[in-house]
Length: 200
Image 1 (tube, helix red, strand yellow):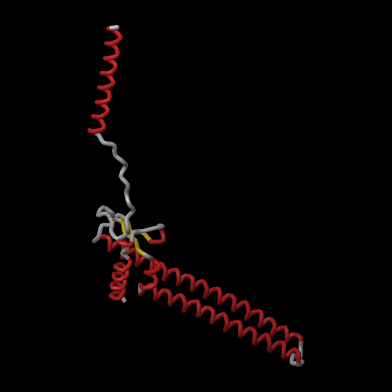
Image 2: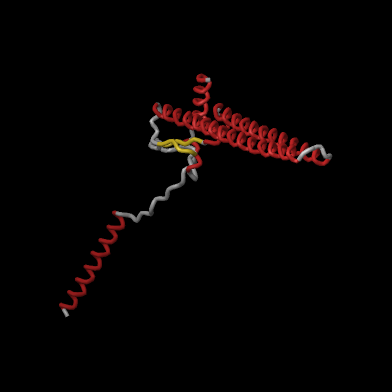
């Protein structure tokens, strides 16, 4: 009986100690819930963020050199279309004169008719060659203009970043979302135009 009573008492003491121990743990280290983070509103950014972005479409719209290149492109294609129309009209006019002359029995010999047909064919071949050459020159000129534009933007960005030391300057189109506070398009356009006006 004594052993049983002692055993029961010991068991009760162990339970009490365990209970006190659990209670102490609860008091000493209250249960914590994981902290929740809210998304940035986009109004500010961490000072460690060292990346900026530019909107190329906006630059192409407001950079004076880009506008000049666009006007040059429009003028080049317009001149090309005008040259094509001029050559086509000349060929069509001469071809019509051959038909009219043949219909009215204006050719006294078949040789004279064949000579005009050969002339028409030569006019057509010469026109195609001339237009092709003009197209090649137009493409080369446009490539040179666009290369100048790209080089101008890249050169300015390189010089601009020497004073700002950004880790990266990205195109807006390269990402899905950028914090608006990271945009430097306006500064870049102002700098590009300022430098272009001096050079011009």
